Length: 135
Image (cartoon, rainbow, N blue to C red; front, top):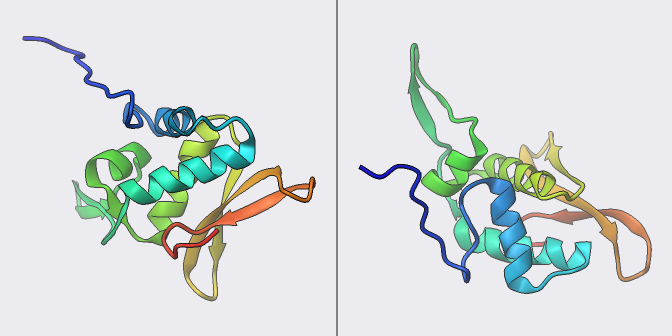
């Protein structure tokens, strides 16, 4: 029996890890700048995630939320805005970008931000909300 067999496709981002997915999204898009990388990731991320309930996994006392970003992203493939912001941040940081998850407490909504130089030449945080469909 074969072990550790991996099938890949150079035209689709890898699902070996969240960071590898992000790096492959950058490569496929030919992204060089942090802004280009942020937009390439957003494009691929929105293609691959679906809206739906959070993944619950069996545990000793019943079901608990899944806290494995790779499992949520590549196996389950959907979640609420909280999952989307969390998985995106994990992927981008693992790919070497400066990213953070933002939680809007009084709205109960989550999105992510990436630090890069914008068109105005200033380095600052840029907001991305793939669940809501804007950046």
